[in-house]
Image 1 (spheres, rainbow, N blue to C red):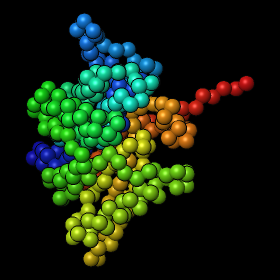
Image 2 (cartoon, rainbow, N blue to C red; image 1 turned 120 degrees about the vertical axis):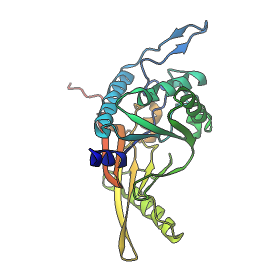
Image 3 (cartoon, rainbow, N blue to C red; image 1 turned 60 degrees about the horizontal axis):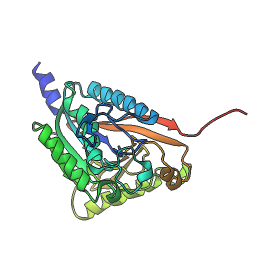
Image 4 (spheres, rainbow, N blue to C red; image 1 turned 90 degrees about the horizontal axis):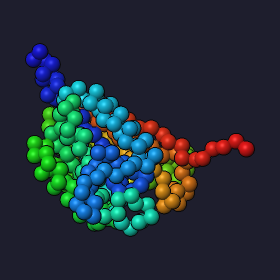
Amino acid sequence: MRKRKRRRARRLVVVLLSDTHAGQKLALLNPETVLSDEHGEPYTPGLTTTQQYLWELYESHIDNVAELADGCRVILVHVGDITQGTRFVEHLCLTSINDQILGAIANLRPWYEDKRIHLTHARIIVGTGVHGWEGSAEALIGKGLAELYGDVDTRTLYHAQLALQDQAGQVVDLAHHGPYPGSRNWLTGNGARYYLRSAMLDEMVDGVTPPRVYVRAHYHQWVHETIRIRQNGQDVEGDLIITPCYTGATDYTRKATRSIRKLDHGLVALEFEGGLVGVHPFYSELDIRSKEAL
């Protein structure tokens, strides 16, 4: 029993999700979100077909994390673009700043309230300025969650480095913006590897051990690259993760991605036990093309 308790005490799961874009009509929205109408009466907004699909998928991924964690400590990190903002009004289902903030809080509440998940810390990374009113949304969401769930350490940060206790001094580096996944199929991951190698070498030049994992988001695509750099006769290993998303394809998304054919919806869980022992992507590919036989 003592050995099991020690092992569980050292186990840690870090959950990484991003680009939930609360307020966008094709993005994640908790069906139990409570808003107020013009008379101050509470109501819950209806979900679009895409939102219903995303919420059911999201719940299944929470189940996956609960099973993986198996009672161990969990840290939740939202890696940016937690709200949609009001720049692209034609994409909105929640048009007010207040409603988007409430929607974003509701999207994260399951992590705080699920009895199977021992959540001790949550970090909200500031994303793209137009989506979060230059960091205002993230700050208010972090404050709101901290007030609702005082037993969980919740904070908002721009670029974070988390030094994990009892994990061989390993560090996770987190920011929203990072490398592009790749402009062609055969180039996917190249930019991520160059970015990762450069980031690690920057630390080594400064005489600092590089973070074990670098996490970036923004591109709504799951990418995972690992490299090793020899230093003083030893290999220093680093991973870079670009997280998937929980949002559909708006007109802007189709334009920016040059008509991407599939979206990656989901999250990533890092498993630690005296150091990183596993990277677990929980995601689903969605083909967004309309197919017909004529």
